[in-house]
Image (cartoon, rainbow, N blue to C red; front, side):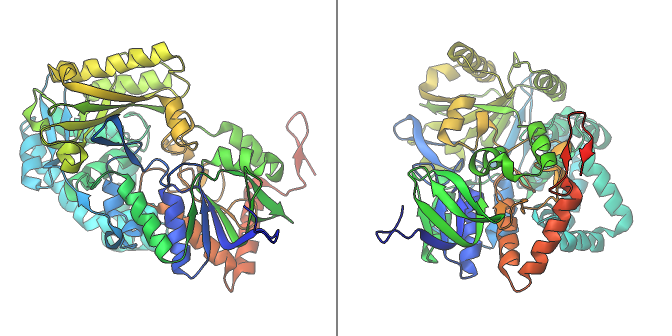
Length: 549
């Protein structure tokens, strides 16, 4: 909008997108005394962190993310004190179970002895191995999570890790993090139970079990499940977004829903505001922060003409994560699984053992839709009884398919049937309990949240070739873009996807540094860094690829 006087609206910072990262960034800037204005295309703030009664009236489910182990452990979210603004975490009796094809199941409990007993049943000695890893995790948790979620490079976090582990053990920790999770399971355990628990957790990202770095996801989520559980916000994931919005508004921040941004204003090489799709302008005195997928920011809101030519070429190689295909079910009773260990679990993995997960990764890499889906399910009422009527279950589930798959309604219906067949095989009578369902294929997810391009929840692949200084393209590993005072604040930026607030916090910190007393020096360093990575602006390639001055 524009004021009646004809002047544009003004703020110290404009945030594009009210996903959780954008709201985290807005809160941190408001804490610093900035006037913050958030614009979002959706009808409600929250992006993929929202909830609604989708499958049937009275059954509440989550539109995107549902479980928040990293959110509960994140120093960013913990530091915001969201409990004072209505956020309450709820826990299922057990965080997670992995049901194998033969209906045996392994479980992770917040009670270490319970987890140890579960994995020990699969192979003698695996319980002791799990206990050793869990005890080691307790020593590593604070410095490791702090380093993983910190702006790049994580100087303080790395120093704390060195002090905690010593150099010899730090090197071995780095090796563990870059191991394929299949190899990690083989090195640490003899039985299928513990191996499947770790490998199944790795599948929450899009890194295959044979992929370098998959242990970083599988081991991290398994240890978080053991430590803080897989909590859910009471009343739905939207409660997390509601708390962030309430906190921001209490500090004078403004959030406009149903206000899509058409473009970022650039003047003299500097981001100075945004224009919405109705033609209204909001000027930014200090910074524009974008909680949108990087290709959307650079191609649609900014324009590739503002980018160095090498970055334009890199952007064409930017890889999306595998698409999510999601089905929510309203059930008249709890899931009648034949594996009793799964009855009290909030999150349930079903459809594959470790060999099956390897096959799944091969299918996705080859662009094939898996004939037998691997499901990550959420028994939301088991975790939070407010989600549906007493004695019922709100079932949230998703599987991954190739990024360009399931474009035809018949293909979508066929894959829904495959997903339900997996559940029916392990829970006979399941289909008879379904009183309503809501299907969100990759295109539906994108309509719900434009940043979820064809259901890419991670803002780009989590594979090692698109992490750290390679995320989202080869660069500085920081939220600073080649445009002065424009910062990437979403999951496309380091430290990547999942709900932990790291990208938003990093963008807020960078924006404050640019606007601070040493801002000119900071900007000069960033320019020098971009010049080192992308070349001088006047460099252009000729048709044979030779760089011309």
